[in-house]
Image (cartoon, rainbow, N blue to C red; front, top):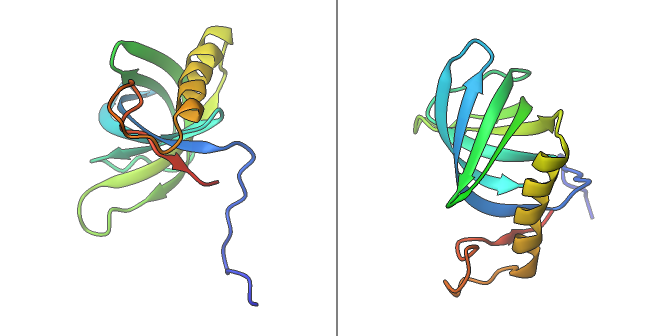
Length: 131
């Protein structure tokens, strides 16, 4: 059987996770987005503005009452296929213990409710996405 021409190898599992994302570029430009995937090393964000690969940024993730601010770098960009939405993969950089703790808390919650959509917990919109 032929192998797929492109495969993605992931070291860390990623989860579907819907949260508000506020991106601030190092020049002060501010871009609003929607975070849709999260792992311990990065995330995937949809925005209305394309941000070039290798751009360093500050990211504020807001999920209800929980907030985490991290530094990161854009490692890939997907165009919206003419719909004006751009998706980008962001690799987290320079995380301190508090930032790791916040991301890990979200990931523990996501792992505890894989695929569940009961509306009984704060992770009711979350789906486990295979790596």
